[in-house]
Structures are given as structure tokens and as C-alpha cells.
Image 1 (cartoon, rainbow, N blue to C red):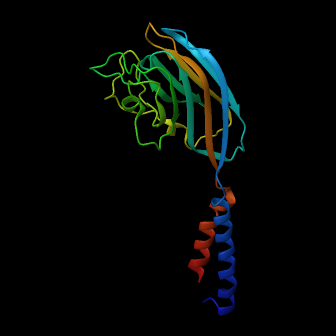
Image 2: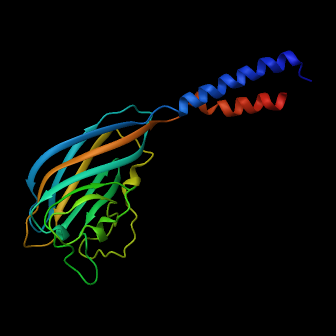
Image 3: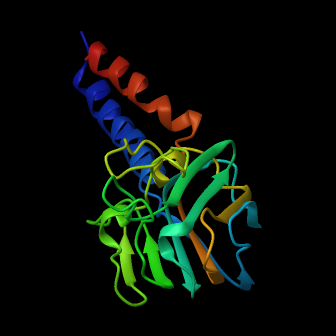
Amino acid sequence: MTTPTKVLLMKPFIQLLLLALFAQYGQAATTYSGSWSVSTAIPDYDDPGFSSTKSITVASTAAITSVTVGLTFTGGWNGDLYAYLVHDGQIAILLNRVGRDNGAPDGFSSSGMTITLRDEATQDIHTSLGDIGSPSGTFQPDGRLIDPLFVLDSDARTNLLSVFNGGDASGNWTLFVADQSAGETSTLQSWSLSVTTVPEPSVAALLIFPIAALFRRRR
């Protein structure tokens, strides 16, 4: 049977363990951001397209919690564009012939766009960008990992930006853009990337719960 003195000693010890746990898990998220001017015309009706690679270096124990991408295009036919982001073996589909469906095989006819893509947005860019002017706003990425020659609005959205969550932010991030139909030329003026990470729990922190449970059983 545990004496009152031992109980008093155990309680502060467990409290210290829990404080260490909260300190470990409560570390603030860190966001790494960059914006790059490109001003490059996307080759018309050309599969190789254009790519831009940027590198990020973060602590090896930091895990991705969210990714945001900004794209600014001028000119062209927005429904022609196919764009994706690659990092660490994962691919997120940003644009896949937006607006293309059974009734509109050429996609949206709007020209140019200034957009922010993030999973937490409320509108799917494939169905919401629109045909008028040069649209702007915040949208969910397309996410349809489908051949752009056959993609439809009804296709499953399996490759949103969340494919990167939990991974290591360090390394190369590559944006790829291609024009998939003849007749108009889009220019990628700039793109931006924002990656938010949080520290992963240390081994010591993960041991806190078992240790605390052990002391509770002994009381």
C-alpha cells in the first residue's frame, strides 16, 4: 500500500511529465513561404510544358500540416491548362482542364487568373472558376488524377494538397504546367508556395503516457 508521503511525491512527478508532454505537443506551427516571378509563356498544345522547382529546408522532425499554392496567369484559355505540384514522391493536381465536362469539352473559356489553392476553401476550381473575364479568388485544387484528355467534373478527387500532409517539407517542390489544347497561349506570371509544419513528438514525449499510467497503477 502506498504511503501518503509517496502519493504526494508521485503527483508532482506526474504533473511534470504532463507539462513536458504539453510543451512538446504545444509548439507553434511554422509556415515557410515563397513567391517567384516566372513570366513564361506555356507552350501551346505541348505535353512537356513548363516546370519550376524550388527547394525548402526545415527541421527533420517537422511534419507538414497544410500546403497552399498561388498561381497567376495572363492570356490564353483557362480550360486548356493542366498543372500539378510534386514533392517527395507525391503529386497534387492543381488544375485539370477546369470547366471540362460532357457539355463543355473545352473547359472554361475565361482568360488568365489569379488564384489561391487550398483544401480548406469552399469551392472546387474545376466547377467554380467560371467563363467570364480573368477570374480571381481562393479555391480547392482540382484533385482529379485523370488524363486531361478525358477528365470530367464527375471524376473522383483523389489528389488534393493533403497528399503532402504528414510528410517532410524539406526538399524540392516542382510546379508543372502544360497547355492541352491548340489555339491560345497562357503565360504563367508567378507562383507561390506556403507550407505549414508542426514539430513531431519526440520519443521522450511518447513515453510520458506509459510512465504516468504505471504510477497510477501503483497508487
